[in-house]
Length: 145
Length: 138
Image (cartoon, rainbow over all chains, first blue to last red; front, side, top):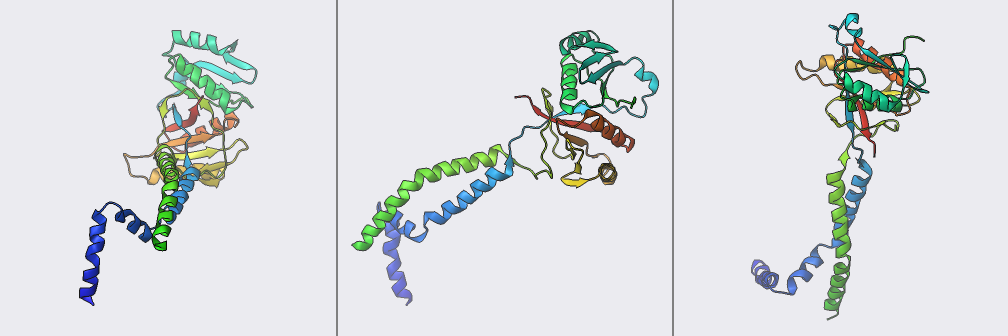
């Protein structure tokens, strides 16, 4: 039994080294189709499971417990309303806000979104202030209502 | 002889789909490298757009706020009180020195007053590091 199988195998091994025989022998053993099936399944999995959203972040300052009300006094108040921006009570556009804040970018800025203002508008104001070089930013709530 | 011809046909057939497999492999590698796997959120949101360049920090906890007032902490939907309680609990349990921060993933159409109120309550609960997640404008 053993000699027989042994005698049969060498021609096969030789064929592996030869030009034509190799490929046909291999394909007979392993078909490509199941492999492609698996690759397709993996492809579909990665297409559905992966997300391409490029997340960024804005750091929000936390007024720590050390900060007292006194330190809020020198701060500039920017109100965000549905009809526009207000800098210390005066109606203002994004462009003028950037210009004004560039001159005193070391001041503390409080951003106060009014009732009914959506997050996108508030983030736009934070963006404008960041463009003006303001680093000390805080969001505060509208206490009026 | 018939056997050999069958083999040949098989060969030709296989050779024909090889370019297809190449393309599929390339697509597979592209999706594996370019996308990143993330657990899907319990509800869909459209994040606010911003020019901010701040880096995302995936190790931090994430609080999800929808436009219609639903809250979720790390993919589990709960009430506002539940979110605040669970977040401060988790931060307290983490080892000192490596306290994770908190990321707020809010809908762009959510009322800002609600988010600010949530932030204030989180701070009262002792959370120091807060970030707002956005996506680039274009």
